Length: 138
Image 1 (cartoon, rainbow, N blue to C red):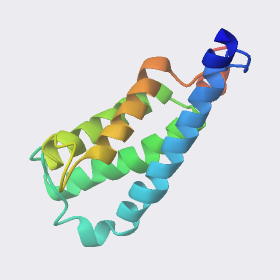
Image 2 (image 1 turned 90 degrees about the vertical axis):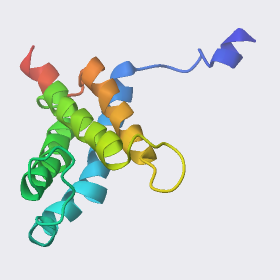
Image 3 (image 1 turned 90 degrees about the horizontal axis):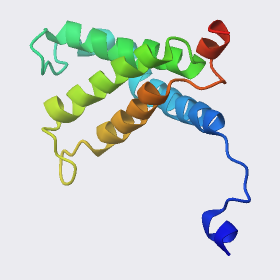
Image 4 (image 1 turned 180 degrees about the vertical axis):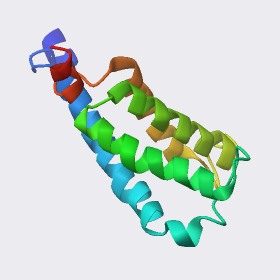
């Protein structure tokens, strides 16, 4: 009965789980958030939110850098922890700076927190054995 309740009869793989996490969240943030910002950079650069006081173009540049380039490295498992750190920071700024730390209700930052938590897990765990980083360290 315990095997059934805990599903311990199924094989486990932390490395496969990390790969799925990297691919799922990395590809999705690129496609749904990063590329749209990159493609409309010229139109957005003067009006992009600037919660850190760096200027709108610089804030947009850092956001695109994280959501496109750091996310692409994350997908590949190259410089995984550094890429995840950039994404954690970006999602932290989005949640606290843009959504005022609000989880529920109008204007909430729920999606930013979900991304933040996923990228935090990758930052803490690393890319796993199915990453370029693991091949480079062998």
